[in-house]
Image (cartoon, rainbow, N blue to C red):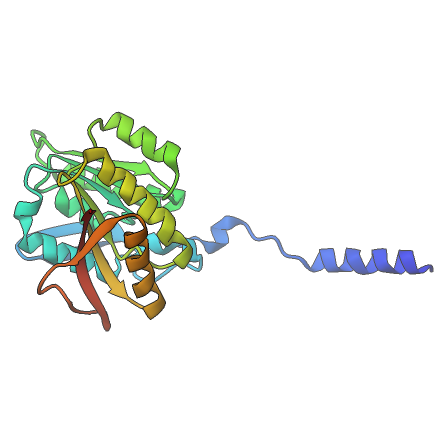
Length: 247
């Protein structure tokens, strides 16, 4: 047998060893209806109790930063009263659904199709419990940070933009931070100076990420202010609420 034939046999053998897994292997959809309490407000929603094997499906869980955000909002509900809100990286929707108790409009967004399924399920479940004459608009939309077409479709549907942008525990990957701030800047500029702010519930997991979010805010000419008395321990990590506005 010639060298070429031997190499072909080796390649064929290597190809036979490659296992192609269906995407369902990574997906855990064993959602459980879970009760959460924030001040006097009780929420029920479907979520996982443990993470999927796919890193991209982190949105199926309720993360510490969402608890921090919801505690803050429940104590400062006047920030939400009558507002229009867009949430970035909504996951299962725990923050956006709390907001719907006070806001006139809430758009919950995520980029992952599997996460959007559970997000929409939770919106439908919440709608079934709500008074039929409730005036709030509550919906889910797909939004990948930095994707101008997807953001453009949302802004076209919701002409005039939003009063508040929310993000709870959404700073995980370094590569996602520049497009996140691209999207935030575009949303802020839609409303102009002083008419919109980004509230970020941030959980510190790495000093590099701490520096990166400050650098990106500066690069986009955004003012980043720590909200007093919000720094605390959440899930054994340090969390804090930031308000981010146009300079």
